[in-house]
Image (cartoon, rainbow, N blue to C red; front, side, top):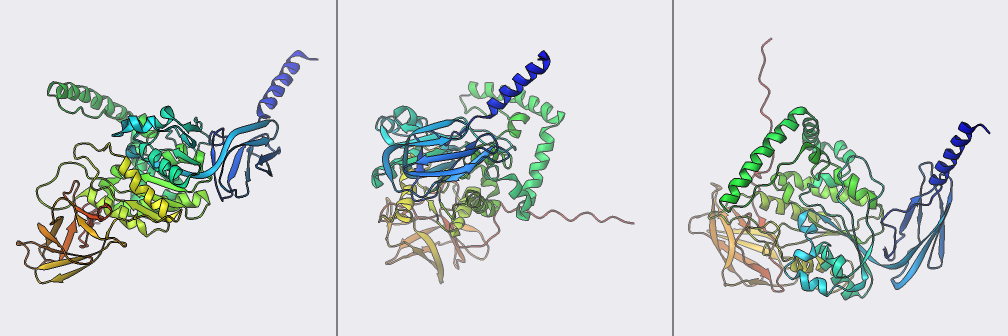
Amino acid sequence: MNKPLGFAAILLGLAASARAELKLPAIIGDHMVLQQKQSDPIWGWDTPGTKVTVTLGGQTKSGEAGADGKWTVKLDPMPVNAQPQTLTIEGTSKKEIQDVLIGEVWMCSGQSNMGFTLNGETNGDIEAAASNLPNLRLIKVPQVGTQELQNDFHGAWRASDPASSSAFSAVGFMFGRYLHRILGIPVGLIDNSWGGSAAEAWIRRETLEKDPRFSPLMENTRKQEAYMQTDKAKTDYEANLEKWKQDVEKAKAESKKLPRQPQAPAQWLAGNARSGNIFAGVVYPTLGYGMKGVVWYQGETNASRAYEYQELFPFMIEQWRQEWGEGDFSFYWVQLANYMAQKPEPGDSQWAELRESQTKTMQLPNSGQAVIIDLGEGKDIHPKNKHDVAARLVRWALVKDYGLKFPYRSPEFKHLDIDGSKAVVTLDYFGSSLRPFGVEEAVGFAVCGEDKVWHWAKGKVLPGDKIEVSSDQVEKPVAVRYAWADNPACNLFSNEGLPVTPFRTDDFPPITKPKPAPPAPKTSN
């Protein structure tokens, strides 16, 4: 045999044998939890045309690897099963996935307050010490920012123990632990959070490009992309880096907070703010995995564009639901906590407008909001108390998804009546009652007259569901705001301890609403 041809044949044979291998994504692996009562997809890759057979719990399903090698089968819905099972998959080779449970699966997404790990929580050390829960399973998705859709990630399911729980999302872990213990069934949690991330990064790029509502956003994205790939961007970064080094030394000398290091152009291009980046690199590899719903904590990065967030946030939820193909799965989020210095006078606030955008998103079906306007820290954007955050989130799931009876919804504004110099606010308490915390007076209200100048106001809780609001400086009030600030001083709770949702009754233009572009100058012929 001709030696060069023989060697080539051997290489081709080796390549063919390398291709002839059954592969599975990280999300399909030992110790995983499959969603109960749902047709769960199982997928992977094999040689095109190969028949692949999947067996679990007495059922067998078959599929065929397509031209790209991918195959998918859907298992019949299964009831809860806390007894470990083996998932067998046979194609060109055979794989056995061990210790598979059937229960409830939730995804934990958002930015740094969702990514905030259990070991940093107020009582994280003892929470972790008490986390030996074999039927609570955890998996983390690495932070990969890219415009190219990724099929897989590096990660593995692990049973909850002090080591795995400590490095997991504190809010996600405690949310899942509540479900596991209260329902008495296996729970799987997927942590794909990314600190500092913008909402637009979590959405498929193509869908943003096609929606005219986000034309300004995408135009800015394209401009930023073009700039980040220029020599000027590199030069600017190097100059900013030198300045940063000097600022760090100065801050150290003055015992001040160190400034944030500037971001290199390549970091932005592969980072957490570029539209579509997180969807392609983090969300897409898990797309379709059977789950009950999502818990979300994000918004800080989008606060300066809170007006846009009114459309962007619900759009993201709707797009995820379409992408998953499981219908309107449950989606619960955490409203922004109080943060930054308290201001002496009432007025406008980007963070208050972002909270309003979050509240408006509750018009979507199967959605809910955990209000934590009392759990923040003025000097720290990452408050350490995540236990109460998780407790408020899980109330929504326990009631709406599992039919249990708990107070779960914070009181919300219902309507406003003006009676002379008094403004009477009616709240919906959702079957509860109102309890001012600390003092009898309702704290946190502001009123304005026709001049639209805001003044602090006194609040008096009336019998029933009403609050009388007034200020000596406003003879004829026209609008009321409550807890409308970055870090408001406010004290109204339901009797069960759920804070009243921040609100405004006015429709004055938001400060985050983009101003129209000035008309183009006229040119003479």
